[in-house]
Image 1 (cartoon, helix red, strand yellow):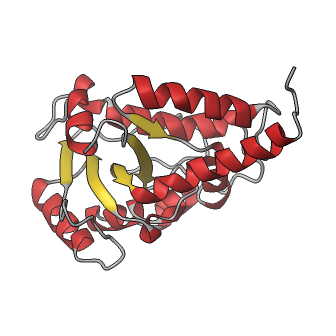
Image 2 (image 1 turned 90 degrees about the vertical axis):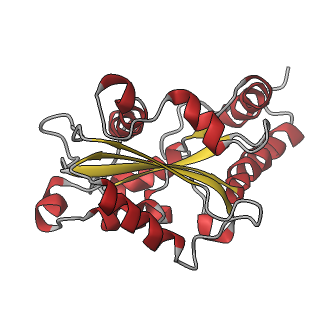
Length: 233
């Protein structure tokens, strides 16, 4: 990301690292600094986000993914299930991540979001931690990790509503590939920070064809630098 770039050779690093991730990982979650930077500015009202702000957003994702390992829940999900449910073929294992609600303390006090509200928000591009528009692609699988004041009935209704939307398109051979996890442990935030605490939250992991946009941008930046033989010795 040009906003939080700490190395001019990031395109080289990203391309070389992606090759390793392609061959030697079972599942990978794509986090884009540029997208997280925009989330901090728009959703959390931070004028000039720093890496500390970005990392706190990422921490919410990691906390939700591992919540079932640390707390009992009515419908827990094991880490191995991410690979089982999200990866149709070994090399198609790069997942988009989104989190909702991501809002400042002032917005949280004003807006009380239901399970259906946060589920709908998770599908919006503004809450996805990568610069992609899933509406232009098709989903192969979706994993919804709920935590906090959430019931299985609420989740069923919210997922059914999401499936019925025209913007949520699945590939023909996976018409409704949803996996849900529920944990009653409420999400927590660092006290005194810009992120507002909420009674419920959802982390969505999704395998969507639009993830190719991320790699297209990386390739384009790599080609521009390599064509000029920048930093090539």
